[in-house]
Length: 549
Image (cartoon, rainbow, N blue to C red; front, side):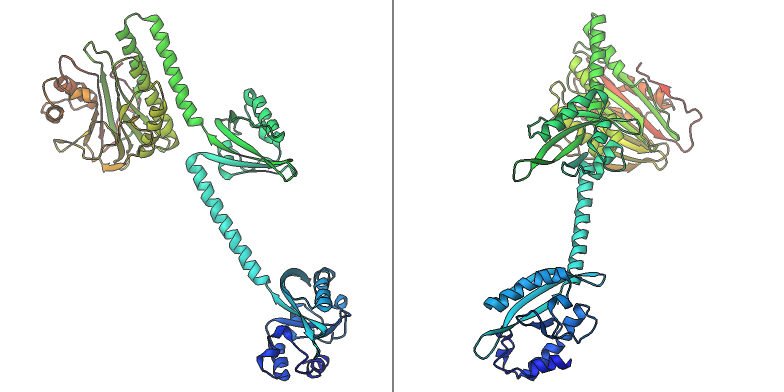
């Protein structure tokens, strides 16, 4: 123990030191108290009315990085940094002047090259007559605990940022903020992805530079209105991405004001509407084609029939190690042409998407719905080809479209290199699987027909197709007979696709099966798609013509 420290502690009477009525009231002798303070993991110092140090224990000396221990008698300004003194001195003065107690005062102090976070507790030291003769300062070093808390805070922030990013990616949304005082702009990671940029723009002009020229003025007016605290409606505009794409976003935004009512920031949310607008544009194009045909043709049935054939794909893709065939026959009754359709198209990763559907109704509306549904399936599949998600999004589109009717759909994704078929069914007849000369309907649960309810979920199923298996997907017009139930029609179809002497090639087998099974009179639309894995790639890979055209 330093000589001056020992002199101070040992020269005081037991009744002199209060130490917040904790130590003096413990029943211990002054030498015992002195020894405890010397070994304490908390810094203790005693300061007199002239701000001189009368005592400091080793922890206080170490904590404050003092050059030596012989500092008793020096003033506070000679021992600690000016900033630290500015925090400490007023509290010491209150303790000395009024006997005040200050608890849990947090401050920072620069010790050498280190900034420490300190917790101070101050209380009076009294004589026999309970007069304040000095102030006791107890100091705890909280630097490490603050660092741990800060790291934990950063970890939590990173975790929530990641969760937000994943949520925005799943929902096709992005968020943004503009600090009008500093000009700083912050875009969420997914908004950067939507706009095709790697980082947030630096200025508002950089943001507006991404806006399509035809939409620039409304976008600029929206930002101006926000800064003036003028309510602005939701706005939709196009962005031209650096890689040449055009994305459609709808945006909602609000102004942030300070206590004086001054707008200091803007913030908002964007939703990527590109896929939906593409599907709607395809639908509008289909309606335009329908209107053009209506103006040219007088016979309504011929109009609808030509429209339906125009909306069906002109050809089917050639897929390695896969044989694919389709056929469509319109109704032969006065009920009119329905909305049966098929589609097959390659995905970006080499897999094959297939779809067969049946729109309720037999009129122009059914045919137009068919075209919109087929276009929507393609658009949704390009974003995310999972069958359960494509049918979920398609259901929302059909339900929300006032000019669309409910539609059954079978949609699947076939992987040629391993024969895997992942599929989902929205109220459509179960396809047949022909294996080793036996045909059976595939067993799986139906989902609701699209458009029946606003929110519907669809289950996905998987099966493996072997080489020379045949998958037959069809519409109900093939198996519905006026005098027989549908189960009887399915049995006839199973027998027909396994009958001897059928053509080997699928593009000949499909029309032969339709001729054998479909009713001769009063027949509804019939649509059939057949797929057969082959052990070896086909000799010809060019696209084959559509049998229905």
